[in-house]
Structure formats: C-alpha cells, structure tokens
Length: 509
Image (cartoon, rainbow, N blue to C red):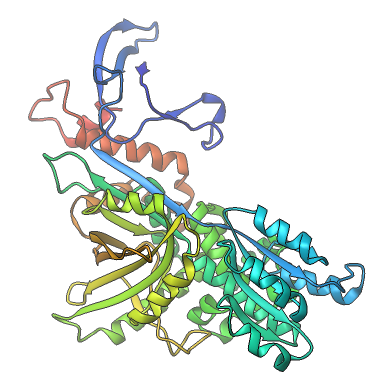
C-alpha cells in the first residue's frame, strides 16, 4: 500500500486498464510506515508513504524531466470569388490541397476571410489567393503572426510581380495550380521542421552532478528503433505500410501518392524520399512525436534504410575526422515558455526524438529563424551544434547531393541524437533572438548508458521480432521506475554484503 501526493494514472495506457495502475515519477521518495500486516495467503503488506516537506509538497525528485513539444495547427485557406465547390475542377483542386493540409477553408469574400484570419490563434495559415483579392487584403493581414505564407494564383504573373515584392510572406506567383500545391508542400514541410519534439533533463541534486536521465518517451522510441534497425525487412514490409496508409490515412493522402510510393520506393534513396514533399515525411515525424507505436513499427523498414544510409555516408564523409570539430546550425521559432525551460536546464541533456535537419550555413539558419518567429509570443532560436568527429559514432551526414531539393547543403542526424546544453545567450534584444549552444553526446556516456543497457536486457529475446513482442509502453514504464528506485532510493532494509543488485531491486518493487 502506497500513499503518494503525485502520480500518473495509467488507465487506458496499459494492457489492464481496469486495474487503475498509477505510475510514480522516477526518484519518488517513500518511507516505510508499517510492515506488520499479514494476509491469509502468507503475503505481507508494507505501508509506504511518500516523503514530503512540512508544507505537504513533494520533495524534489533526484531527476527533473520536462518535455517540449511545439507544433502549431496548420490551416490552408483558398480565397477566390469564383470558387464553386460543386464544380469538378474546384472540388479536385480542393482535394489536392487536402492531401497536403487536412484542414482547408474556402472563402469567396475578402471581408469574411479577414475576419476569420483575425480570429484564429496558435495556428499557422497558408493562404492561396487571386491576384486582385490578394492585393486588396494583404495590407490588412500580412502583419498577423498566424500568416505563414501567401501564394498568388492568377492568370497573369507579370501583372502582379511588382506589388508582391513589397510583402515578404508572399512566396510565389503561379498560373498553374500544380505549382501552387508544390509551394504548399514545401511550406508545410518547413512548418514541420520548425516544430521541436524534445526531452530535456537535468539532475537537481547537487551531490551527484553526473546523473542525467532521458525522458521515458525518448527511451521507448529509442529501444524500439534499436530493434527495428536490426530486423530484416522485405517487400512485405512496404506492402504492410501501404495497407496501413490506405486503412488509416486513406482520406488524407491521394491514392496516386500511395501507389507511387509502393511502385517506386526502390528507385530512389531513403534520403530522397525523406526530403521529398511527400506524405511519408509527415507520417514518420508524426508517429515519432506522438509515440504511435503501430505507425513506427510499420515504418520500421524505412527507419532502418534511412539510418543505414546515414551511417554509410557518415563513414565515407568523416573517416578522416580525427581531432576535428564540426559545427552546424538549426534556426527556428520557439515559444517563450519553451525557451525558459531550456534556459533553466543549461547543463542538462537535449534529445531529439526524430531525424534532425541542420545546415552548415549559419546565415541560412538565421534567415530560417527570422522567418519562423513572427508571433510575439515566440522567439527566434539558433541552435549551434558542435560535434567532435574524433569520438562521434552517431550517424549523420551531409545530404546535399542526395536530397530532393539540392539548392542548399544540409546535414541530417539520425533519430534520437542527444546533445548537452552548454549555454544560452541573447543575440539581439530587439529581434528576440537567442543562441543555444549544444554539444553532441555519445550513447556510451555515463548514467544514460547504464539505463539503456538495463532496459535492453529486459527485452532480450532470441530474435528481433521476439524482442519487439516483449516491448510495451506499460512494461518499459515499469522497468524504468524499478531501475530508478534500485539506484536512487536510500536502502531501508540494510541489505547484507552478500546481496546482489538484483536482490535490492526486487525488494524495492
């Protein structure tokens, strides 16, 4: 029996939701109140109470873990006074946009559109407009932080080239709707790239400054990735993923895109597919960010292929990197509240649960950050990432010659790369610009390596598929808590010197 102030109810997440399991955070401290009650079947009841301070507040845990996930809603708006949704051309065109952005709003009146744009918050808007309507409303909406990009769809591009040059959010003037859709794909992917899905941890116990602990969600997907990249995949893996897309996302993705992927997958490299304006990127990013285990498993063949291609390129590009440092950059917008979390955890670890795109060009990254943070509640952030090539083993590579768009150099890191937050400093008070200095960590570093190895051992099986069947959200959560109790809780039962680590851990259950 345990009395605790804090805890997370796991109903709905475990295999046995009716049992009302509660998960206590790592480092929760408990005292033994009594152990004198025995049940008829010989079991003994131990009464544990969470240790709190005099104000009945839970004492600080040994580890403080926070998660940051910033991903705004995305809406595509089409403003055109001639739109007739019952007409085949317009209905098919709307479906094309919906294949890229699920939420599409149609307006035929400028005033109604402006009213809507002023009302929506915490959203990114991609606006398609005619030349004449665009020219009349741009002065009223361009300043809105929710407006991410504007695309002009018109009959005569020359007529609108001059006035559009005065508005930075206008990203294209096209007479072909297919070209408009390509621009929407690029913008939507840029918004995805601006989102950050991370786990940050810092040891708050001054006695032990070397114990860093990665957020559990990171560990779940890290272990799952380890299994997936060692599994053998064949044509059936692609077929199963395609079937999953049809069943789960049939209304979101055009049938032709799904068929194209199935037929042409081996004609292009994994990096090409990852960087192409294609539904694959969105499915992959979303599954890793939301811990959608079914989708992650279905994508296992692609995660493995992309990881292996990065590993091969890494060996080729950096085989002579002894004693050298590599610096790359990532510019993006970040809510002020998330920046505060970063600032309060300098010295801790920052992990990215997805493949991370960076650039060796500082100026391009700064430009990306300036474009991203239009909202006054957001700041511009430039991540400066330093990698010691003499010790680096995490796969990453320059993918310029292999990516879909090859206009700029890009360095792509494999999923679950880990960095230490070295320092954070303001670059420009007026522009709300911050620089976050990161140093790449290796997976064999200290405490985190111990936890990883412990959890690896818990899901060992004769084959990769067996290990995969053994892994579940509730199981790994339980393993994590058991491990944390075993190594952080002060021993209450004074074990003898002959007791093993496993004995102590079992008693702590």
